Length: 529
Image (cartoon, rainbow, N blue to C red; front, side, top):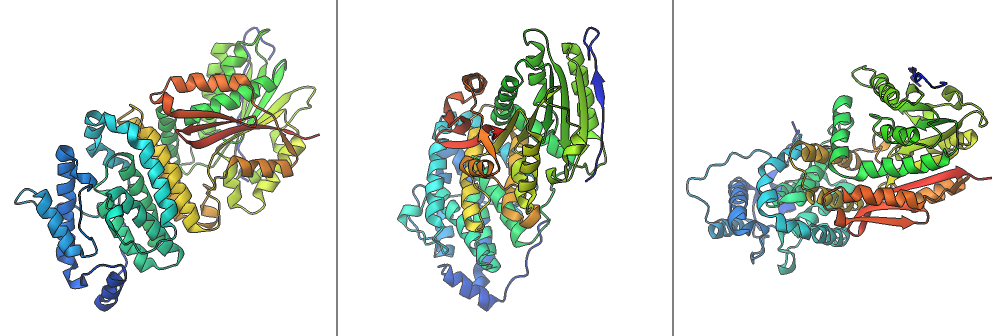
């Protein structure tokens, strides 16, 4: 446990207080594998085919802007005869003579969000396509479930649509990885790159991020902490501003905390997910407007060590203290740095008697990380139970990505993150905010797909799973009231595509989703008697 304390106390005047490729297999072995995949081609012909595929990729992309041929909706050729199929497609698309190839490893991007820049034209000229995105996501889910039992892709007339072929290739690559057939997985990975290049919008971006994650797993590249702490914080800020998910998490949790603190003179919040402290200005303002004046507000923030040795918690604390001063709120901040919440001990938090001070525990997108460490979740929940807070607020992603099977986890994550990317695509936000938000989600995708063991921290679980865990740990639900629902509804009305967001009450919890898919859930708990 690395411990670091910072005190910021404000008392108002009138207050009392490069991707590495595997070596090519022998040509005879490769010929056998190509045949097993259903491709009527020899490895000696692959150079010419690859060159034609690259020409085909550019031809399809260029034609997409004029005639929508990129969707391959009228293709009636069997891609198993790969060489003939590519040449026929090139003839049909009739690319400009003298075309030269400048593509290199088009499906590997250290920042796949860059793909978005060359697709900006579709945001302006094809806005009518946005309303179809949820259907695309729904179809992707059906195909991904079907593909789980298919390893070798046999394209018939019903699977000519390039997006469906792309999902099949992604799922087949995951299946090959689970079977530890990395040579076959590599072949599918190369196929994914070609198919993804013919897509536009959210499907292209999602496929690119999943392809990068698959590549990192196949080639055993380091996938932990891909970005510096300062950049990770910046990515989260952009995600916060681009879409309502983080705001929803903060608003609903704050409302539950505010109601639990009603009538209390001294209040204390222990935040397990301090980050940039974006959640607390709104709560501070609500406390400042409380009839009878604001209570004394103490905040304990928990953060992870910074690789640059900069004291980010101290900076956040000073900013909050300055804000509290403008609101005439007596405020005290203390920060702890810990590698894991399991390193915390109740004595470190300096709790005061319940007669003196009421406190709440807040965990936004944080508790699932404990599932990477055996016994960590049980330890933390036991500690919270012993502390007896007025309320425990939890916000988590509504998806099960903690199963033991890689293919199941891959399928669930593909559906889940495709829906999130669809919702980003459905907004009018463009430029830096959107790209950085996509990178923020891409970082999670990489962790889910490429990492294992203690390095895989994105172990999301569903509300049902959290209910069972908390119930067995001695907690009882504290239903969120109508005010939380109203706050969330008003928040969603401020965002483009607000009609497509789905707000649902589920047994006293609030779920936010996009169309028919729930994405995040806020719940509140108390210690049972």
